[in-house]
Amino acid sequence: MFLPCDLREWVPQDHIVHFILDAVEQIPTAHFQVNDRGTGSEQYPPAMMLALLIYSYATGRFGSRTIEAATHSDVAVRYVCANLHPDHSSICEFRVVNKAAFRAAFVSVLQLAQQLRLTRVGAVSVDGTKIQANASKHAAVSYQRAGEMIEQLELEVKELMERAEQAEAKEAQETLDIPAELARREKRVAALKQARQVIEQRAKEMAAAQQEDYQAKQAKRQVQRDAGQKPRGKEPAEPSEAPDPKTQYNFTDPESRIMKAGNGQHFEQSYNAQAAVDEQMLIVGERVSVAPNDKEELVPTVAAISPVIVDEVKAVLVDSGFYSEAAVQAVEEKPEGTPTGVTVYAAVEKLSHHKTVADLLPQPEPAAPGPEATAKEIMAHRLKTQVGKALYKLRKQTVEPVFGIIKEVMGFRRFLLRGRERVSLEWTLVCVSYNLKRMFTLKNLVPAR
Image (cartoon, rainbow, N blue to C red):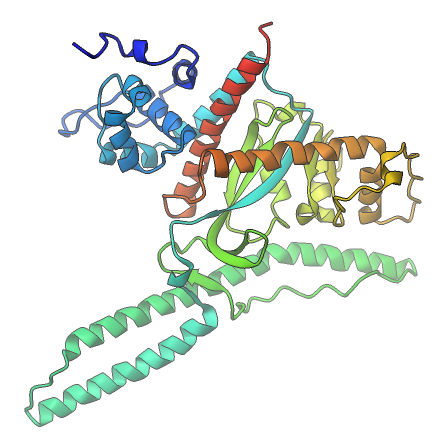
């Protein structure tokens, strides 16, 4: 008697849930996996489950049990689910097995944004932010410490075996449960050896990846020597396959890394979540990296920009953490040497936030660098031009606020899933949810055309 016949009577017409449901209707659901008939599990429509996850993430609900509880207590969530109540297991399973479908949803949402004329993609800002992994940094061990612990545990195993032999010879009953202690230590030794093997393999892979860059630098310096010029800077060090003794391995989520967090004064077990953002603060490219810094992330993050809008990109804006001559060249030139039509604007030094009175006055265009200028000097000049200043200012107004909204407004600060593949899936879901939330705001700001 007290409930309405239709839940729509309890959800305002201007509520975001209506926009999300309309958007999900435009997303093809052929990619989605559902429970097979005959398994005994309850069946839920893929579109409903997708809308449930998107609305939940957009409103700060990330855990499957929290989402399940909201299907009973939140009117808007009940409306999304048509008064059904998917259990937390079904929600979690749907989220984990539908990576390809969430990728397709990301593209479909950008296509919808284009149809609504909500995109502006002349310049794209690229940046990364550290998101905590679902693992404690205290569950990690360094390469050096793992070796020390293996030696210590092997001595303890030897001691336990000697005590067992002595007890057997005396036919005495040992108060210590030696078999259980042996099994516990042998299991720990095996885990530590695996950790060292993984770290060693990563070191080899990193050295192989850096070898080509090292050879290119050596070749360039040799050309300079042959021309009678003195190469600038230090001689590049040849990549080593020897692991860094401080390299960490986490037993809870081995693919996560210890990374500097906040203002760089402390460390967290994290992933490096990358995003490319257009001028309307929509995420147009996303990926997850395990690199603790952004030095090698420019090329793969630009490559992750959706094919829906990649042809419209004319400028890429990044901070000094992304800059390297090789990365800029890879973005601006095709492998055959022809230009891609994309110009990179990258800071090559720290820029002061304070502006003097002289900075507020009109500045003349800086003199063009000479023919002997280095790539770094050319990039510095590019940012000092009026066009460069105007474009680079967009980076602070686009990508940095996006991460602020995701962390502060949506409240997403820690991945719930583990492993890089599943974490990438969850980051895609976060980006889809953010984009629809942003599109809803833009749609209300932009007058009808």
